[in-house]
Amino acid sequence: MSKGSPKRRVTGIGGVFFAAKDPAKLRAWYKARLGIDVQDWGGSAFSWSDAEGKPVGGTTIWSIGPGDGDAFAPSAAPFMINYRVEDLAALVKALRDEGCEVLPNLEESEFGKFAWVIDPEGNKIELWEPPAGR
Image (cartoon, rainbow, N blue to C red; front, side, top):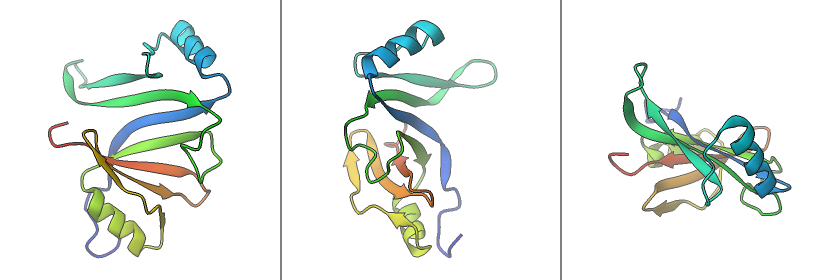
């Protein structure tokens, strides 16, 4: 880790997104065969719980989208993992200082703050700092 980098980088998986040739058919398969409660927006939110099954703050998103878009560009991979982080600005700075390929577009919305980095094999990785309290 570089000097001044955040102590904790990734704190969990915020989501798994992948592209499909026929998203509706694949969503239906996952719903029928694995029981995933696929919603109209194309995915499901898995709520977190502790060892006793009690809810704890957080969800992991699972989503299937069309394979003909550029959501994962510049990666050619048909998937993208979203990692939860505590301090996106500090992590982005540390990754840039370490020579990582961090994409220039950063986003902020009611869902939190987002940045993207390309791993050594060309996979696009999404970094997400949830809004406070989520």
